[in-house]
Length: 95
Image 1: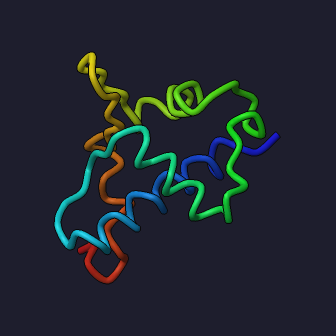
Image 2 (image 1 turned 60 degrees about the vertical axis):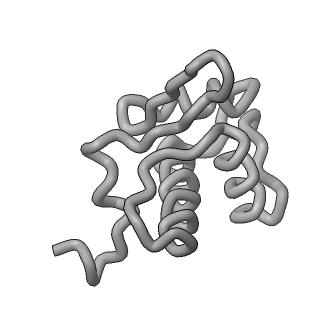
């Protein structure tokens, strides 16, 4: 089974990828967008079951409190908590 640290590093990499494309503070994305980014980062091999959970939502719940899920009834949004946002800023910008 893969570690929590590895799981967190994948999610952080997905947020970094989003930051590179948008060039502004990216602290949230939909569950579907995050899933696509995780698949891109792992050559389509990402599987939550490798982390001991049945689906992406359960995978992200395990990463709390750094990761939060916000469900507005229409879309599920994945939010990087305030205390984890520094991790997506490249080290030369981390001040």
